[in-house]
Length: 67
Image (tube, rainbow, N blue to C red; front, side, top):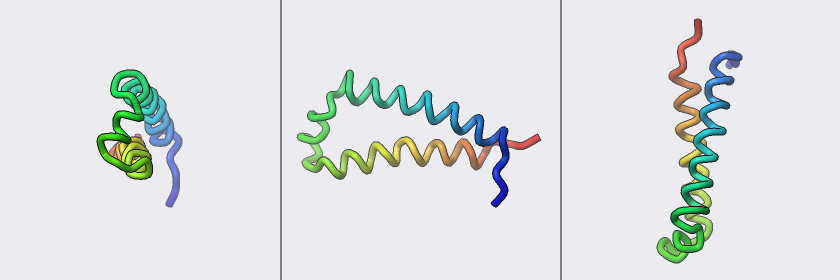
């Protein structure tokens, strides 16, 4: 698989912005411990948050058009 610089750049920008938004949302607004208490598992919360960052970033990389 050959990586394209433009696609990586857009995916990296999206990753940084999306990650910052989720950190603000989870740590600032929803409180991480509240999510752990609600879902009952620290690992489940961590995995779901990782997937919420990785899957959209992969989608941005996959669907970005190369010139």
